[in-house]
Image 1: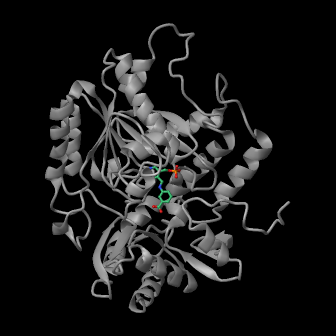
Image 2 (image 1 turned 180 degrees about the vertical axis):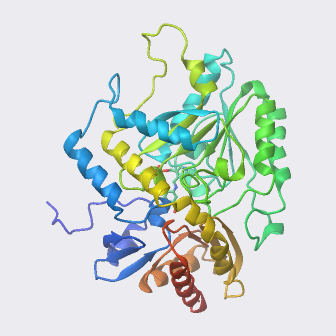
Image 3 (image 1 turned 135 degrees about the vertical axis):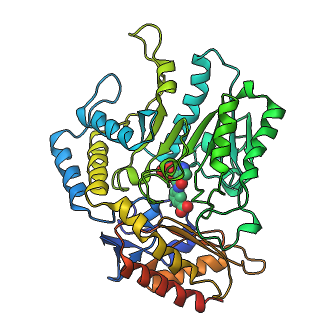
Length: 436
Ligand code: PXG
């Protein structure tokens, strides 16, 4: 048997395991905007954990709600049984969502929300008598979690290459990251025309064979790619014209990241379904949710009322403890005005991040709401190394950032203030100045 503190047994996700275990980085506590490391140092959380702790750490209302729920009702069967908080949370989510999005299907993660939405899309068309609509369309550089559907519609090469045939019947639109838009503040001017690529795919595959298009309104994981002005509207118009469902993957853009409840509300474009997770429970208890239009939901509510309408669900769908965490999280966002805080701070954040222009290796900077990216020129012959070194140096300096390729991504908790922004970019400036 391994000793409790032996690091060997835990096969860590998306981690260079051998490198990590030689020189581990451990957090042992967190409060507000800061983590505490095993050696007692404070680290400013520049990434809200993994883009999920939007209300910061150790939020008393969430902690209390979870503790209380554990003693009141720890678990209730998810199939053919219910408990009040899952219904209450669904109503709260629908109230926050754009008009027309009226139903919630619970999952345990963003990846499962994506699989669920893709399955619902295909089954919806079948329920309407259009069973040939099975093809799915994603986008290059898209991240939709790590399950088979998600990596199939996703567009990140390394996440796909080792895993065989993936799903059949998938096409990809081009990503929206074009050189004309470097150093743009907020939404880029150029690139709405890239949505027209969908017309090309429709012409090749025929709309009668296509179930859905899935995109992140703002592509987070690949390194913060903002939608060009007019792009999402055009995608909405083309999908509608062809009877294709539009799914927004809002796992990162949901719950205030852009200064509004969702990317859909921020950009003023309403999809047919939205996938969420992360900020839904402030990352405290795993939970995801698919938000769907009444039209989709109602297409299933046909026939014998005693029959199960959708053969899909998880043991932990709407788990009571996760539901309690979700309710307390939404109350915290609302009562503390955190989405408004993100919106109010956004101009200060924008100025602070763009002030990094001119530092060594910086080739692009992008931002919106409380999210941002600093793209570095890769070291010759060693992609990802330079940004990862920045990550290690920042951690040593007491700042948590996230890197993907040679892009530094920032997505702090929405409780932050101007002092935290100054601290974050002060530290990052020092790191970038001293980077090889
Ligand atoms: N969709 C989107 C848009 C995401 O960003 C998922 C689905 C999957 O969610 P789960 O809960 O299954 O992980 C995500 C997750 C990063 C990073 O640093 C991004 C994610 C997760 C972990 C790290 O870019 N996105």
